[in-house]
Image (cartoon, rainbow, N blue to C red):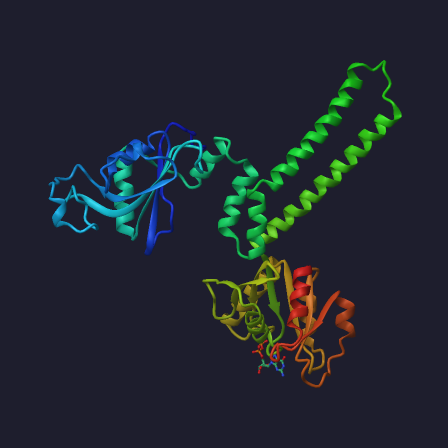
Length: 401
Ligand code: GDP
């Protein structure tokens, strides 16, 4: 069910990942952000957050004032202890105030930099919620930024893309989108189409006045250009999908052609491995590489063709599923051997999937007649996974894909 949107609520959440770190942030946004901060924060100089200037940070403590507390002499205490309260002190913090409209959500916003442990963050958040804030839903701060007109939908999407960027290139594209490059393109296009529409409407309203030929030509050219511009934006959208989700590439080949060596070679050449994925099974290994700015999820499949037992049968069916789901197949052949029946079975198996054929072990004496492979596949790259030869050519082929 669609949740009702209520911009009157003041929302709060822990803005940093759950775990242990030096710092963790509790963020509060909404009309009551400053009055809630007044209730939970004790500053070193005794001033209240509602009196702080925007974009200023303040040292102090998060204190649960409802707990019995006693005033102590400031002289006896070091600066890390709250001078006014002994009980109810939750954490020593830095608090930042960002007043409306110059904040991420365009609302009054308070960020509390706590120590990044689960307990101080949880207790600080609980106190903030008890003091009048509501726990935010996932993405609600960005939703408010959108609803309050600070960003449009393309920019809201870019925020998530920046967080999830898996390569430098993906990050720079998302940053461009956040800066409004896509929004500007779309609004310029909209303006052009609207001005063409107004000329057409004038002609419909006053049909007795014929449109001059030059004007008709201008409309026609303008519409064609707008269609071309839109097509370009749509093309870039699929590039955006690749940058967001990466290319799923699967390495296939019969046993011993050098599949694992190839994965290792790619890992060695690509220093910026994004992340080794969890869920690695005994028969498939999955890594995410950054190949020329494109995140490529590479799966090294089991090379079994004729399964001998249940485990191998499972491995084969998993490989088949990987091939089916892959965007790109890297089909490896052993250049030092003749083309075998198993190679032919695999060539059939990949079907119409986009495939780069890799003739491996070019450092050895070559026996493979690769004419048949060249006839079957457009992209053929000759490599040596062991000697790291032509891995750059393979990367170029993957990036071109
Ligand atoms: P997989 O079963 O397809 O994963 O093959 P491996 O990567 O385990 O390699 C099988 C054997 O071929 C190993 O002994 C590798 O060292 C060797 N090998 C892999 N690539 C090359 C290469 O480019 N040149 C040579 N000479 N040997 C290679």
